[in-house]
Length: 304
Image (tube, rainbow, N blue to C red; front, side, top):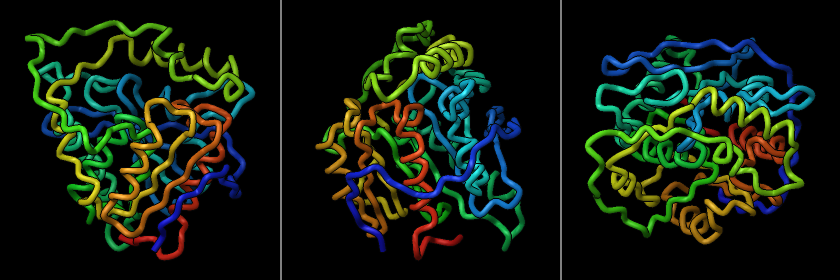
């Protein structure tokens, strides 16, 4: 059992990091082709599936390559012994929109379930690796819903920048007849870098370039009231909640509600001082990688 609030930079041994080969997989779900990226160590001890946020796809967020800097989350986790996967949800990155042109919470969650099953099926039992989910921002909402629905398939879930207030019940609203397909802009790509002394200009420049190249058009969501089916009390999957103390998208009051209401007794909460909504790309990078590794390596971690 693990139930703790940690307000500190997490210190743990993070392995030396070097850029690793990036493999693209084509995973077909209900006839639609999803791009799933992988970076794999020689002897993986667990697998983790990364789910990006609302605006930008997996590679800008999770495999950002900056000359002279270590910003790739995928490289860091692979160097620490994890088989790392990252999915581009429908309409993001290298995954095309489906025929509807829209993405919904339920569709995103169903795709995540399918990718988890695909990861598990790549190894025959009993050599299957335990699978963890990691969700960033809106991806954290998708990951939480997936974990709530099928806890038996997961060893744990990690949530970063989770800003959904469980007391706010979203209502159904009408969407335009056609997806607006609004063009993304550089200012939006740089907007999450808030804490000036926590990032470098080369990181921002590299992210803006990679983000606009991967996602020139904003993905269109509808039926967002489906997120309201998430109930923290029904979360029975082991969970790590990671929170940047300067993140305006994930207020402390909301994080407190989530953590105290999670139904599982196997839960941890890590607050990263000086971190904001782009914590995964800033100088807190090593601290939150260490927090995830400590969670996966904790005594009594679930084996599937």
